[in-house]
Image (tube, rainbow, N blue to C red; front, side):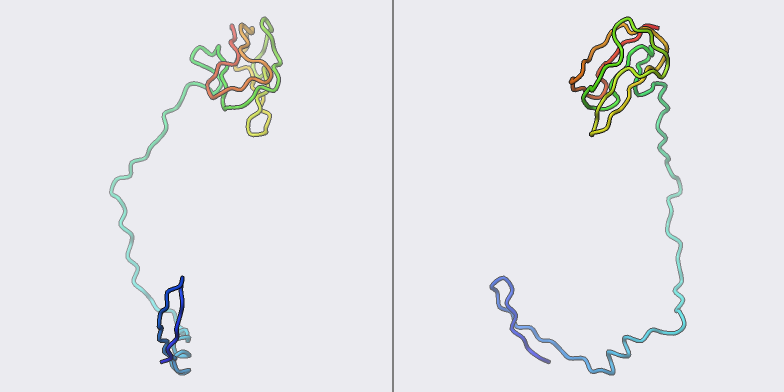
Length: 137
């Protein structure tokens, strides 16, 4: 056995290291030619599995229950407003552009109607759920 002095973080330790003969180290390094079989036991599984299913929502992320209010689906900044009060719009028509995380998102009309109110202007910061536009069917 060889003794060494080791200093760790200013603390001195005496460490003894034993040398292993070559025959032992080569025997430990050999791998058996045939694989050994280890009995596998099945993992215990719970008898009942409770599955959590989200309730279906009847609302889209941009409309309220009446289908007349378009809200912000994410926080961001309004880049441009494509409509004004009194404009007739059809389903899927772009109402405004919302920039979120350096991406421009088109906010589209959920239904046909006439723009009753526009509550934002370019440069306005919005949060999730803020009312952007109100439609009259």
